[in-house]
Image (cartoon, rainbow, N blue to C red; front, side, top):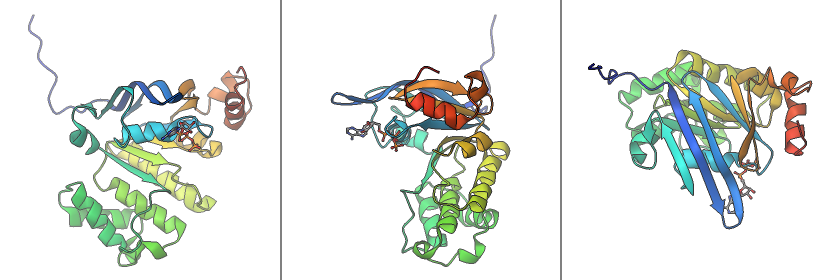
Length: 254
Ligand SMILES: Nc1ncnc2c1ncn2[C@@H]1O[C@H](COP(=O)(O)OP(=O)(O)OP(=O)(O)O)[C@@H](O)[C@H]1O
């Protein structure tokens, strides 16, 4: 029987698919066979103690580091074979990657918009300035903005190309609780109302419980636990996600 092919325009359900990812530096295995997906509209927390392999994983997904082995597909596109096309579907925000401080908010957004080839760029910048309440800072140099204001600009930059996959490395570190809550709400909006999914790293377990649909707990480059952050602690006889995290970090049986 003849079957009709799936419609070309249907986007894949998974915005990120990582299979058997591995990175080795000499005798050090930083990432040891990670496999996981991020679905559209989903926020996945990548958790683990210092040195667990989170940044190495994110850097491989961003194409900054070449994996020793394994595969990464972003929005269904193989990163190793079609790097530019795959990376066009992603964007990134982290406190250690601030925007050039000598450029104004608008100049930064324009520069990154041009790099990503964003269509109708002026319109897109206006949308983001309004959405992230940055209009009054448009002509201010990023270097003089407060941490919370800079985080909102970094988020605007990370959304400029309407990424299918948004990578966030501790996006609320150094923010006061009220600003952090506001940023979390905006990222939730991106996941629920937009067309993307989010991979989020954080050391703040309370934040993770509030914002993530699913968490992956990594230890020594491997996923040791995964599931709903609100249900996982009880499943392993712990009162909180923080307690469970500490148990895993100590390498104790859970
Ligand atoms: N270029 C490198 N050469 C050798 N070892 C490396 C290199 N980069 C990372 N590592 C090692 O790989 C392991 C994982 O590091 P990674 O930075 O991914 O951890 P992390 O989970 O992001 O930690 P943190 O929470 O402290 O940022 C660590 O043991 C680290 O020392």
